[in-house]
Image 1 (spheres, helix red, strand yellow):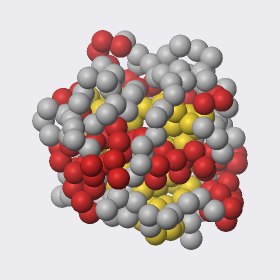
Image 2 (image 1 turned 120 degrees about the horizontal axis):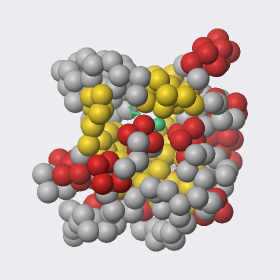
Image 3 (image 1 turned 60 degrees about the vertical axis):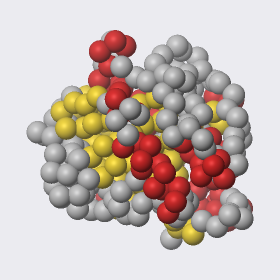
Length: 283
Ligand SMILES: O=C(O)CCC(=O)C(=O)O
Ligand SMILES: [Fe+2]
């Protein structure tokens, strides 16, 4: 299993790095304490916070994908989360060098109505953004319990080794070429990533993943913090940042942060204003 219990002296050992390189992911249980999870939850639920910038679209199958996305971490609680050692520093060790914040988002899969994500690799999109190398990765931090009933993430361990698969438009979303994915699924296993609030999944940008609609009565919200290696500065201008040095903060900064919310520095995505296609905004 690629699962570890977070403790304050956690570090990425050679064995953990080997697991990440082999399978493309690790899970860190309770990376946030109960107190940190509850501060973060009140920050993202606050009506003056990130949800002011929520946008959504149909998932191609009758339900809605809702999210908010911001390019810069900022100095409030969600900024401390994205810049702290246990999230950003751990990703740095897993990716093997300095990283910067590429964006963060809140995925809001509401009870009964939350939409599905088709099979994709995040690098399927980021390639088109001018990131030449797939030296990129994301950390999904569960706000709510996430399981098969409420549409948890599904991943194909080891699929990062396939390289980038062709991505095509399927039902309004850009997704991986399903003929290829079907062949991949005959060869590789499928893992349902079940998370409790405060658990985190660290995954490589070429790991194939998807998630089902939320047919349950329980909401499934999660924050996804995404990083790019400093050495992989995009060669095209697009809707996410070029290399921007990121000041990391100690883990205690989440609990000690004096600003629950500060939306000034985050640079939110506005699909109407930005005129980028919705499918490219998914990542
Ligand atoms: O959290 C999910 O269900 C999937 C989100 C995702 O893969 C993405 O936003 O790229
Ligand atoms: Fe994704």
